[in-house]
Image (cartoon, rainbow, N blue to C red; front, side, top):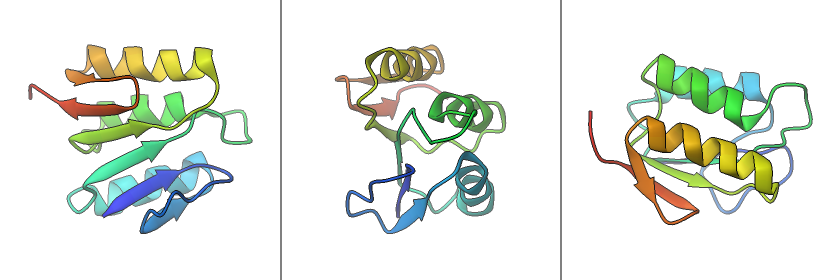
Length: 100
């Protein structure tokens, strides 16, 4: 299943979380069934997609595939840096885990 955490878009994903809290709940509850996380930086709240990614890495709930769908250049760059430091490689949008 594809999960998107975004306060506005759906991008055809099967699961949609509109807030950071809802996204974390889905990742915690269904992390073994999430094939790909599509993540936005700006989530309309104080907490961001970067906060969710950091939490998911810490708790080992981040799927092997992540798509960074943010239109916020500094936010997107920060999420990408966090993914790369956790062993993900990608092309600026699509990232995949390369090491455990």
